[in-house]
Image (cartoon, rainbow, N blue to C red; front, side):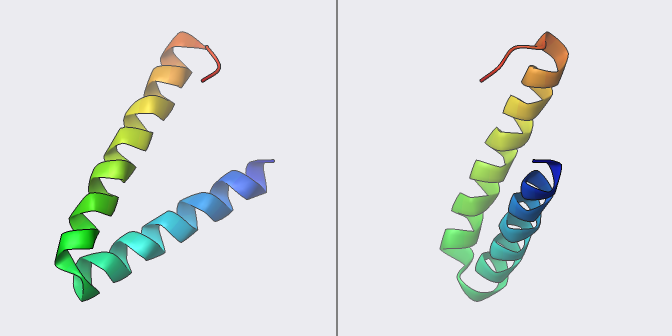
Length: 51
């Protein structure tokens, strides 16, 4: 399961970089989604709850 999480993280980062440089409008949307995911992961780690 841990490898799957890292795979998703790598795919999101690559998608964000491609979107940021190739399509600036879409790249910013992916950036916003990544920020939301990071906030949710930090919340989960701090509270210990499942999302």
